[in-house]
Image 1 (spheres, rainbow, N blue to C red):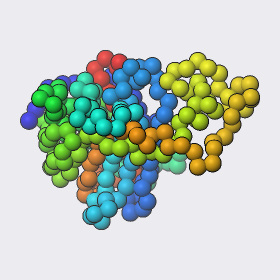
Image 2: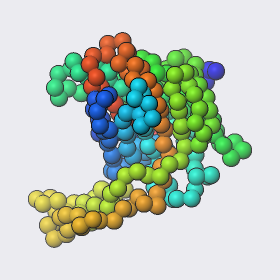
Image 3: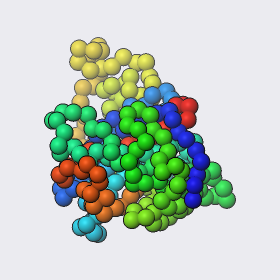
Image 4: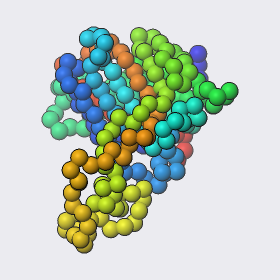
Length: 257
């Protein structure tokens, strides 16, 4: 199937790069500071990314991209992806051979676009894995819009040699966000309140977390894009070197807003 749509403007970038050994432990990144643009467009807000060995198949790896944090529990039937956003998983399979401390540059991508919600469901379109059209802060639809596979939200489906799920999942991150905002209030969705960090603010507000803390996200969901794929998808990519790769994710729109 061919979906004719081009996404040119970068909207959000998962700021934490996940570097993973394919046979090692899982690696994750998490983001909690949002720009005004993302506050107004939560479907493009990347909360975290994960890359880990498949728990059921030693030959596979699983990549996860979570977006739209803060969905209330119990809203699975009414939560949908933003149909104007292109969701992209980016991989640098040459990371082992690159200079220490260098910025990864994608040479493999898997992309997802979402149909308009209809009849209480939503189509999911998968493109790749394939080489990107370009690298950097602009992302465009790969494979001339030809899909690798299609499915429906909240249902697992095949896309070539990938197994894909895109839908609602419980937010896996444990974090005391309320206390974090007490410590650094200017991170609270664009708040202009001065930071309490030593040497920055007044120094009169909390500087640490409470013992145990409170799981702010215990009743919160996210929209997850999950891909299980053979390790060979990454290790046999043209230019792949070694078993260490870079993985991050971006969301893009045509207008950048």
